[in-house]
Amino acid sequence: MSVVTKAGLLGRLEQGPVICAEGYLFECERRGYLQAGAFVPEVVLEHPEVIAQLHRDFVHAGSDVVLAFTYYGHREKLRLIGKEHLLEPLNRDALGIAREVAVQTGTLLAGNLSNTNVYAPDDISRRTVRKMFDEQVMWAVEAGADFLIGETFSYLDEALLALEAMRATGLPTVVTLASHADPDMREGVDPVEACRRLEAAGADVVGLNCSRGPRTMLPLLKPIRDAVSCHVAALPVPYRTVGAQPTMQSLRDPDLPDSRPFPTALDPFTCTRGEMSDFAREAHAMGVDYLGLCCGAGPHHVRALAEALGRAPGASRYSPDMSKHAYFGTDPSLRARDQAYAERL
Image 1 (cartoon, helix red, strand yellow):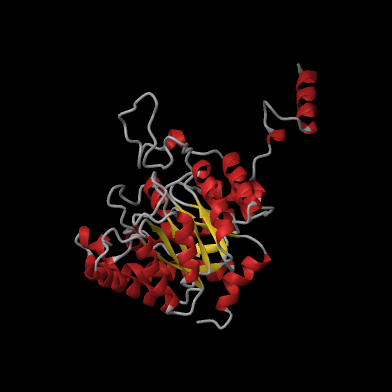
Image 2 (spheres, rainbow, N blue to C red):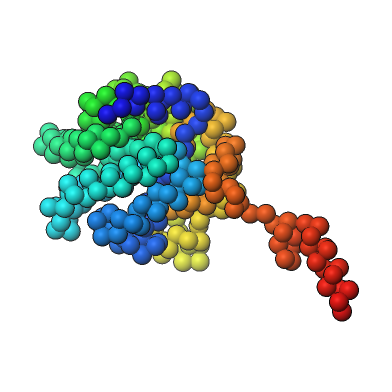
């Protein structure tokens, strides 16, 4: 483990915003390498080249972080599909793929913990969940992770268990909560108080990810920023959630009110690049400095976010330039072309 690891994440945050691309589950499902419903990241073992390329695509688009694809790569998810014996190979391979890309691109390598879906507020559950976190943290440390992320927690206590496991390593920690239609955590604690408690427990970065889109996440961020002194994270889903339907799970097609678009029919609700740029600017203006996107995001969304923060990632070379469009362009060369064509007639 590098002696400058701590300065990796926190040093960069002191210099300016850090961008982290999440959303691997949905993107791999869209590309045809992961099954919606189970959402188990078997693609890591079956098509490692897909994960490596997606890491590169996100970095090319502006991500400062290569996040090892171990979301839902925990014991319970693999048990559900009868593949618990693949737990360690999946985690080690995911970390190895991410590490190779991080080294090649000079980005930060992050280990990843997530909601377990088996947490319950009793001692047996806590011990089970903590053991699940400990083994994933161990593999991340052995792979040389620069920092650790615990994400998408609906229970504050589960987030605190993940934080305990991560802090035991001495690595920097990011903990983000999922705020659902009822914005409070399952224990009834509001997101502001939950983030206060996470900071008090030693988290370096606290905030929100997943579930809510830009419009319905933004109002929750300023109170969190005002309540804590540590860095604040915001990684929404790129969907047009609104007050009456504040999460991607609660979105409904107005023409089909009984339909449930989540998770495979959310396309009509997808945010534009401009909407993601607006979110990035607004969130950063209120002091949020760890920014990214979650389920549903593609590299084009990440590029828009990065450019809104004043970045020019490699993908910016190919950012739209409608001045050269054959029909709508204004570039002088187009007028010269039209004139030459007219002269030939």
